[in-house]
Length: 160
Image 1 (tube, helix red, strand yellow):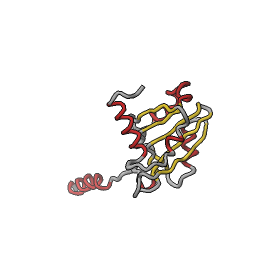
Image 2: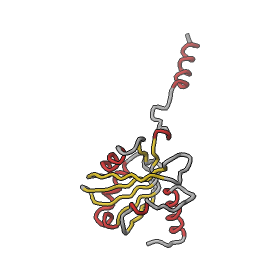
Image 3: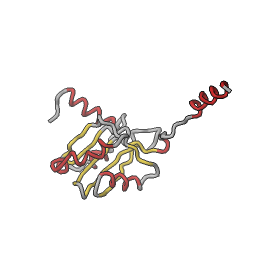
Image 4: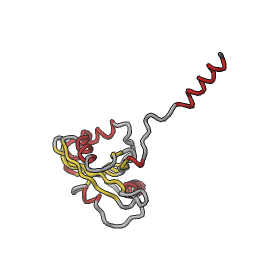
């Protein structure tokens, strides 16, 4: 009887699985988000690689809504995969939007368990959409490019 109990106890550890797994093949990994507008009327832009083989080519989705969560839901309806911002590196926020209440805009990202807390926040003079629709060829994924650019400016103290 004791052998059966020990066997069952050990087998329970071997039979447990990942109940909360998220497979990359089912996700569109978002690394850059652009935000413009104010709570009540917001536009968000989400950039993600168009293929796994070439992460330098990407797609920009636009979502509109009253809150940032609504904009993500709206943009998510326009893609075949679920958007995931677990690797978010950069948030581009329109200057006019940031002047009102920046914390209210970013609140949804800092309350989410999947959002990284080390994402860089950049204030743009114009629409953040134009920063996501660059047609120049880069050897890096767009989120990594902006993250490295901002980090280099911080290291050289060339920011204000």
